[in-house]
Image 1 (spheres, rainbow, N blue to C red):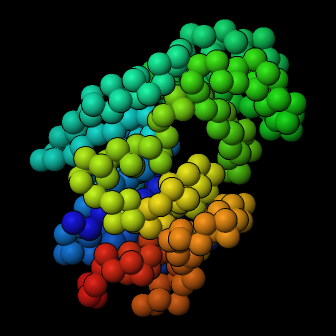
Image 2 (image 1 turned 120 degrees about the horizontal axis):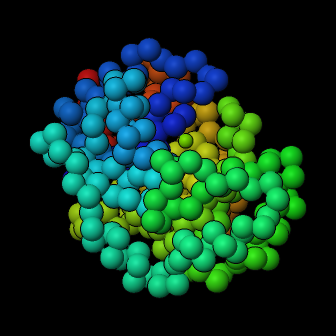
Length: 271
Ligand SMILES: [Mg+2]
């Protein structure tokens, strides 16, 4: 089985400041169909926002959606989404002290943190906007109030498009990496048999966890550096940096995903 897992925004989706190859999404849809690739989307997006991206950009439906930064897993078959309850049970068992109410009250007094709207939250995801200019002090205070009490991990990122700092509290056992490991395990696959493509922030976890990693050419400098450091510490890590100039494709976004899939032999012939 050939599994191609990919982040969406600015990895499969051409919604950044680099120019996209206009034919790339159609090519991706064709290749994954023709070569019977098992497609997994791994994204911060909710189901609703993923459906929006599918409609807006014309990307195909995946076989599996790991959504909400790894806190939900859904399978898609015959036009229906099916929620993976086993993942919920798995996370609860691994992170027994996870407690949204507890986190909310622990950070309630911190200035510069604003809870995100309900559509960005779920039972395994408690998220805040952060005043980015003061993020260092705010995050230090968050750490003092919360760290480790709720089996949580706190992930900070900066949205360069909106200028907002974003802070997600998730159960320690639920992120893009662990959710993808869960999916690979269910499919009976070694991690190295799964190709994962990303561009930034929390993609660093699956990119350094033993999957066959791909960084699209437009990947954040910071991510490139983190992955190179991880590779220096562990030379067995499989990572490919898309560079473009490949079958007339630029290496940015979808084109980088296609280039990476060819690199690992997931795609073997031309479309
Ligand atoms: Mg992304």
